[in-house]
Each structure stands twice: as structure tokens, then as C-alpha cells.
Image (tube, rainbow, N blue to C red):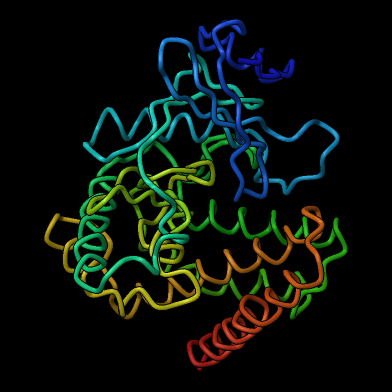
Amino acid sequence: MSTPRVGERLAAALAAAGVPRDEVTEVGELTGGTFNSVVRVATSDGAHLVVKLAPGPGVPVLRHERNLLATEALFYRLAREATEVPLPEPLTPEPDSSHLVMSHCPGTNWAESRQETGAREHAVLRAELGRHVAALHTIKGEGFGYPSGALGPLDDSWRAAFLRMVDAVLSDAARFGVALPRPPAEILALFAAQGALLDEVTVPHLVHFDLWDGNVLVDGDRIGALIDAERAFWGDPLADFVSLALLSDIERDEDFLAAYRAAGGPAVVDAAGRRRIALYQAYLYLIMWVEAVPRQYGSERLDWLRRKVVAPLTALLDDLDDLDDLDGR
């Protein structure tokens, strides 16, 4: 059997986790991500690992994307200590922004296997997911914002943290020359006008913010793991409902919501909650559109983003403008 090729960055990441290069028996690239390089590694003792390697220093990234792997490791450690949610085990001993070694989890990407899921099985899985997310939302922090420090220290208020997050992606749009539906200053003002709603969030909860089906592994009739927690932040638990119903409406997901509520999930979808969800949808859509330039997406992907992201973003901004006019009367 031929010896697998182990590059220097991969070897250094594995060595930091206590895995010598000569114990590696198999290396295979995992596809589907758009930011980190991800490989699956098998070792001579029968272990299977996943290794993430961050982009090199010369690769352009959004401001909030610095130190993402340290955030992912923190998320897993906190959640594994506090809950029974199935998650990878981080094996890199200290937070590192350049790499993360973790255990390999069972299951297949739900976005790819969804067509094979029957209606009854789908309902069971969504209910299980609701219970897992409710458990994650019991974890509370000391401040609001990205734990990586990419945008500065944590804030005492959710309003301050979230507006800083929005301002960062708008500055990225200017830096990368991304055309937006409205001028950046006008967009920021629309978010800022909803500051009183943001002030209703007084406790920072751990938010995954990327729990779309592609980051849920399904193992038979159960969830094998929730993965890719690198976008996590401390904030409003309602923010997780955006990716959980990506390009859709969480209130249509009755199986998820019923289980989430029954498990004591703290997020409440009332009138104020719906307005905050609209803010978080607009923020996510901004990220998805702005990152297209540094990721160098092709024309087909850009056309999809214009239809599925930019068009609803434009509508959300118009709605926020209308709300601002109504609130000002």
C-alpha cells in the first residue's frame, strides 16, 4: 500500500494534536466548503479525523472571518461540556486560527440526502434538531459579539455588537467593490433604526448561525452531528432561526419549533421576534452576497445569488424602511 501524501501544513496540524506523520494511513479531501480546506485522515490505530486548514495569509477574507477555527473549537468545547448534543470533539489542544483537528462524526450531509428522507422521518429529525438547538441555546456568555475578537472585544449590549457586525460586512462590501441594493450608510441606518428591538436581548446566548441542512449530518434515523460552527457568536438565539430555515420561514417548520419549545428553548417568535429575525436575515444575505467577490464565484453561482439572496435582501431593506417610516409617525 502506498504511503499517503501529507503536506507540511497538514503534518504540522496533526503533530499539534499528537498524531505523527508516519501514523497517517489515508488522506482524502472533503468537498462542499467554500472557506477552509478540509481533509479526512485515517490513522494506523483505526481513528478517523477531520482536519480544517484556514486560508493562507494572502487570501482575502471578510473582517469577521479572522480566527474562525478558534471560534469553532471554542463552540464545540463549550457545547460538549454543557449539553449532550452530538458534535465533533476538538483535538487541537489550544485554540489556533490556522488549523483545527477534530474527531470524524457519523452521518451524511442532510442537504445531499434530503431527497431520501420520507415525510415521517423528516418530522422526527426536525424535532430532534429542535431539541438539540434548544440545548445549545442554554449556553450563556459574558458579552455579545464574535468570540474570535476579529471585530474587537465583546460588547455589553446586543445593539452595539450587532451594529458593529453589520458595519463590518458593509465595509467589506466597499473594500471588495460589491454593489449593494442601497448605499452602505443608508443600510446601516436602517439597521440602527431598529436599535430598540435589539435592546430587548439582554443575555448573550451561544449562536451557531450556520445550521442549514448542509451542516447537519444524518446517521440513519437520527442526527449524527451538528458541524461547521466556525461562524458562531454570542447574541440573540433567534439569529439561529435564519439558517435553520435558510431562504424560507422558520414558522413553517412546526416539528422543529414544537420540539424546541417543549425542550425549553429561550427564543420566542412573536411580533418583535419576527422583526429581529428580519434583521438577521438581512445580515446573512449581506454576508452571502459580499463574500462572493473574495470567493471568486462563477457566473452560475452569482446568478443564483442575485435571485435567491439579493432580491430578498432588497425586499427586506424596503420592509425595514417602511417600518422606520411607521415607527416615526
